[in-house]
Image (cartoon, rainbow, N blue to C red; front, top):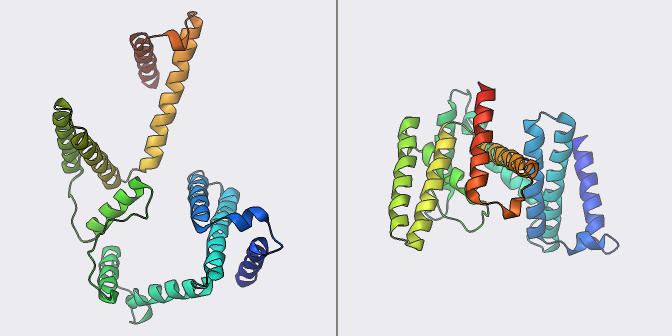
Length: 263
């Protein structure tokens, strides 16, 4: 049963953290396990994309393991128990789904559910918070940007047409070009951020997995660069001694060949 396996995992984690446990596990901090969990989430996502069910099952367990370790440390510090944390989220789910648990019938559409969730969340706050806040806790700036954009969209502050979003990307690139001409480093950094933010928004709007798209482009670059090395080696040249124009000419040739092949 699930409960038995969860309790068994908790006992193993406690033993590893205990006085007779593993010296490595004893040394780890909450921040360490959060970093491990980010890695495990990436591996979980990869297994999901590949539809590798056995590996997906294992990676899901790895994520749960990091949560158990974090929960154990919180108990060691007398902050709260993992049971209390689970109770809190369970109660929150029930409170914020009144159309399911408190009122008969389930006639809300998906966007209405999000709107209801946000309204209930706002009434639960003991002090007035802004709907969207900056944070120092999210290390992944790309994830934070997506979260900000999703929250804004949930209250209908969003574009209607992807062409409008694309125009915004072009506008930000033009502004970047302007500050590059005056060599203002602070403004360049601001405009680079605006370009990235608008591209992330476009990818969200078009339902494109930004990480997957970026990884695909990076892989494509690596494969083409390998071919540059091969071409240089075939001609007796060395990569370190070659200049940009030579390599760029090879790059264009490889790219043209790929386009022709694709056609």
